[in-house]
Image (tube, rainbow, N blue to C red; front, side, top):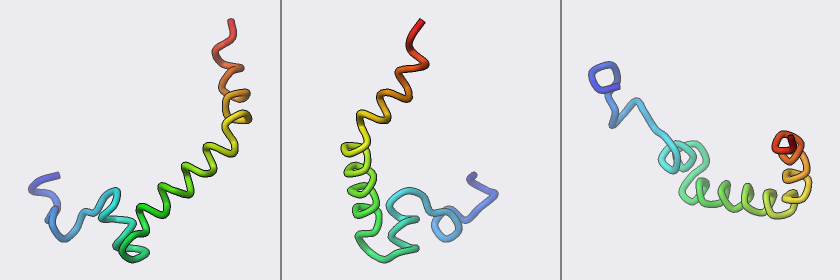
Length: 55
């Protein structure tokens, strides 16, 4: 990307991106939401992916 973009001003990823969009702390809140959803939906997720592991 170097040379194509001004990395300091034109490219934001992960925490920098989400906090830019939603304000400071947004990235952490988003990760917390995904963690809670993952814990709550774990059995459903395991069942779904279990179909692909069975032979």
